[in-house]
Length: 163
Image 1 (cartoon, rainbow, N blue to C red):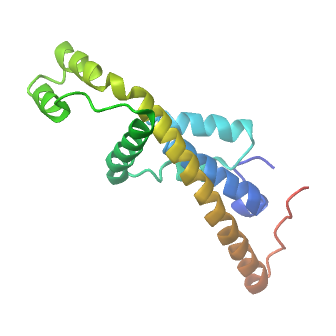
Image 2 (image 1 turned 30 degrees about the vertical axis):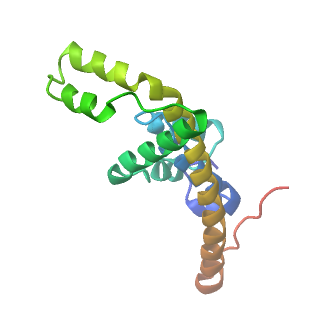
């Protein structure tokens, strides 16, 4: 059966893995591409595409700024990368320029370039941690839900994981 089948056709391990994979891409540094990358991975690993995409969108708009700021700051501290001088003043002055002009984007790239590696490495590490935690929470929850369906609704027993 393909990966878009009803969730009960996959084992709890595979369903939790699909969810964890989606969480990983949702919190990765590839924001904006997370949907495409998640779908490609779902097809490659023959995982439930809906599960991967739902999980990829757990990085909600009000979480994006704090998450990427904290993971970038943590990685910058670990890598010994300091904030550019007068960062907030320079950032504020950029917004006096037109967002549609070259000067804005050139200035933003120059200001943020020292933080590129901390952004990439920090958000990858954060995504790995969140993905692992989501798997560890999702698998027992899925197994409990399957047991509930089996015991109370006379559904066929859930498939066992292959060795």
